[in-house]
Image (cartoon, rainbow, N blue to C red):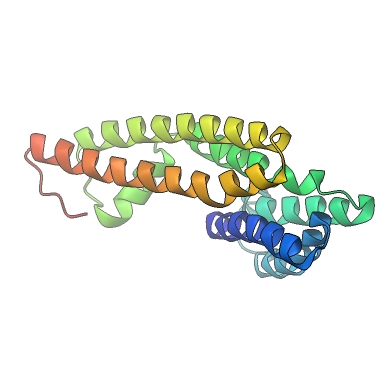
Length: 192
């Protein structure tokens, strides 16, 4: 769920920029958009009896970031905190994927095992490589999101609200094609 929430906020912020521009409002007003959405999402994830404490904090991190950055934008009447949201979300996902490389099963392997519980050893190796590829993607995308902060708010909104999602779609499509090719090469049936 944190991934879906981060995705939704990642789209809402750049769209909010264009709405503010259209209404001739300062962009920092988008902090008002973030707070109710983030607080609603954060309350859904609050269950003191479910899961490990660190896991609960990690799940809530996109909502926490939205509250902190949205609140800071409103308090300081400055859009700069909002511009850092995509950078921090890329760092968040980089952390999740990279830390899973130190575990027995990577994040991608856990996702793959939902569809293929009997994942062969070649699939395990492949999912580890895909996890590394996503780490590189988040490093590059985060660096470009950071660069876009200094390029002006219109460039920031264009990159973080469109181009970044296009690149993510290309990454998904490229991985899907590569997976089918690897499965065919290994004589496996490509289900997905």
